[in-house]
Each structure stands twice: as structure tokens, then as C-alpha cells.
Amino acid sequence: MTEPIIRITEVTKSFPRHHQPPHIVLNRVSFAVGAGEIIGLIGESGSGKSTLARIIAGLTAPDGGAVDWPGDRDDGGLRAQMIFQNPYASLYRGMTVRELVAEPLVIQNKKAADRGEAVRQALRQVVLPDDDGFLGRYPQQLSGGQRQRVAIARALAGRPRLLVADEPTSMLDVPVQKEITDLLLALNRQTRLSILFITHDLALAAYACSRLVVLAQGKVAEEGETAAVVSRPRSPETAGLLENARRLHDGCLRLLTDVTASHP
Ligand SMILES: Nc1ncnc2c1ncn2[C@@H]1O[C@H](COP(=O)(O)OP(=O)(O)OP(=O)(O)O)[C@@H](O)[C@H]1O
Image (cartoon, rainbow, N blue to C red):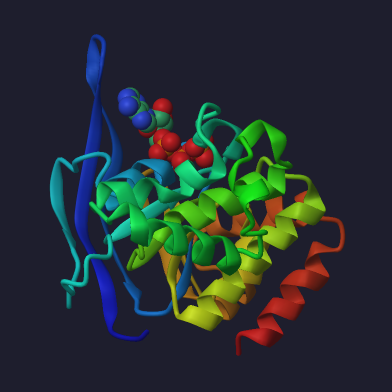
């Protein structure tokens, strides 16, 4: 791993329950993300992935442990920006593409004059048109893939150190899933954007990520290079995710074999 840009140490989170002890959703979770790395956070539904994503993005406070950003730089960029599973819900219908992508710039008090070019640049980065016609469109006038690209452009406009992508493709049609995953890969390769790629789909994570962290019942069950995790799972939860992935994707075995070969 390269120099870490974020270090998560012993993070714990519980939620209160009626007439029951609190539900421990994250139990002393630790791992780091290296600069320029695309790392997969995988786990079954309910394993705590989204809660951890929200803690990293500063949307939820942990009960214990620490989230550190070593080498924080004071360049006005944000630490983390998030994209969500559902681009239909995450983009407010009453705002145009221009307004949506400019949101982080408004939060950062960027002058209106500077926002225009930054918005256009972010749209070009996600391979969307940057003309006035497109900038004036509303989310409901876009396809699912275009909406997720707008959500990514909005995240990029905040110049984050880490992009937290929480199941970014699971609501999209299969060809669009690959398009969006490939876009994230291209951004990672071209700009060294660090990405935490969250999914329940081990095959997709293995396709995109060089390293994987497996979360099970709020704990790190396994962490390692993708090839090692995929070819020699060390936890029953990883073996279960592998089995699900094989069922989920026809020909997945081939994809996983390819992945093993491509991440020696
Ligand atoms: N605000 C909350 N209040 C109470 N319980 C919560 C809250 N947020 C999450 N939980 C519970 O925490 C557990 C983990 O949820 P979380 O969304 O983090 O898991 P996940 O791995 O992302 O699952 P999924 O893929 O289904 O979103 C679940 O049992 C969920 O019901």
C-alpha cells in the first residue's frame, strides 16, 4: 500500500434498540486506504458498510475509535465525497445539472465566476457534455447512467481526497454498471483519485479493486490483495461472498480467474 490518506482505527458504532441492548453495527474496525488506491469494502447486506461510509464522509459520528487523515493538505479540497446507490434519490429534482454539480463549490464559498469552469471541468471528467443545454437539464431528464455521472461530477467538484462510492452501480442496468465502474477506474488511473468502492458483489469488487476489506457483522473478517482474497479466502464470510458472486454472475468464475491473473 502507498502512503495512507485515511486511517480508520478501532471504529465502533451502535444504534439503540427498544427493550434490547444496543445493536453493535461496527465493532473495532481498522484499515487504511493508500493514496491513489482503489480499495473494495465488501460484505453482506447489514454488515455495516454504509454506516462506515457515512462515518468516513463525516455524516455520522462514531461512538469510539478514530478516523485520521494523515498528511492533510490545506488546498481547499474536501476530505471525502460520497456517491450513493440510487442516483434517482441522491440528485434533487428541483435543481439543474449546473446547480447540482456546483453544490460543493458553493459550500466551499467559491466565487460564482470561478464555479462555471469548475462545473464544466467536472462534467468533462465524467465524459458528459458541458454545453449550456446539458447544464440546464434536470435529473429526471437524464438516463440512470447520466445521473450517476452527474453525481460523480458533483463529488469531483469538491476535489476530495477520497471518493466513497457506496454501491454506485447496484441500481443500474448491467451494461451501465460496467460503464460506471470503468469510469471510476479511469478516474483512479488518470488522476490518482483514491476510491473506497463499497459493494456486496465480490466479483465487481475484484474487477475494480487491487485490495479488499471484507466486513462481516461489523468486524473486518479479512483484508488483503484481491488475488489472494479471491483465490484463497481465509474467512467463511469471504467464501460465502465468493459463492454468491458465482451464483450472481453467469461466467463469473472466468471473471474471477481473470482478476486473479490481473492482480498478481
Ligand atoms: N440510523 C440507524 N438506526 C438504527 N439502525 C441502523 C441505522 N443505520 C443502520 N442501522 C442498522 O445497522 C445495520 C448495518 O446497516 P448498514 O446500512 O451499515 O449495512 P450495509 O452493509 O451497508 O447493508 P446494505 O448493503 O443492506 O445497505 C443494519 O442492521 C441497519 O438496520
